[in-house]
Image 1 (cartoon, one colour):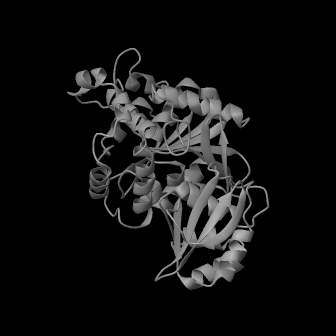
Image 2 (cartoon, rainbow, N blue to C red; image 1 turned 60 degrees about the horizontal axis):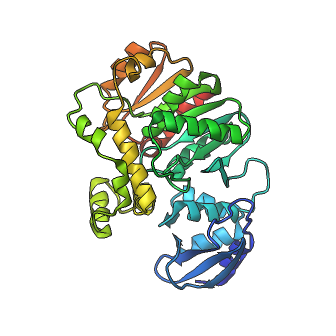
Length: 377
């Protein structure tokens, strides 16, 4: 691979956009069909070296795409968005590097930051919209949504506590209330008084909790296949109440077994966004704190009380912010049948049904983002 385009790319590195938290960060720049070099960031300074050792992230493109990236200030992110360049192993590092070498200097450029113990990315200017990912996912799962909304809004996507590159406190509740309070602290740190909130899956449940407990901080809620309290019997609830999630601090299954299970469960996990999502899940789950946080959050989703004085469904009737629910007709985790129960609890909510599964922003991005943007603006 010719090094001149890569030298130009690395020379544009801006640590104000993405400051790698490790003292030494290695990003492999590989050419499809052979050849690679490493961009190495040491104490905020980037240089190009021969490929060596285990990289933190791997970026792969064909030779012509690398040439264009070297010549075009915004070529890296454009190639990534058009699937001409793939990012594997660590999307936080890989996409952060692309953003930091874009050469962009105008307000609203894509940036990777940290506040209130949470890692986040943001782009755009204007009214803020804060985005929250699902269980086991990270802020990068909402990067297409950030790209779609940032021309009109200040789009912020965060890693929840216990996920991605955010803090992972052992023993935290990791329930909807804990997450919602963490988002409020995050808004305070960014001096955001009120924001639209968009969430997928667990992130949708957190958005609802924020709307219920902190209605004065939420403008409108965009809920993409949100997790909701089960209405049917939960036979495992008594056992799960006794089982402590800190057992996740131990790696009970060998890593190859865990990876094999995850890749078999997720359709299309060998390429595209699904493969990158598997990478993101595994890099967090295969750490003791990340694993404990995952178990704790999954346990709380199952134990979320549907009825009673503090039950989810009676409380949902008190929701004040305007809400848009986006449902997937093929969603096996939050079936479309839930839409009827939501309509009964929140008659004024809006609904959109799409031919997709549980992650509308990745499976049906155009329809999802058009609906959300129209609703928020």
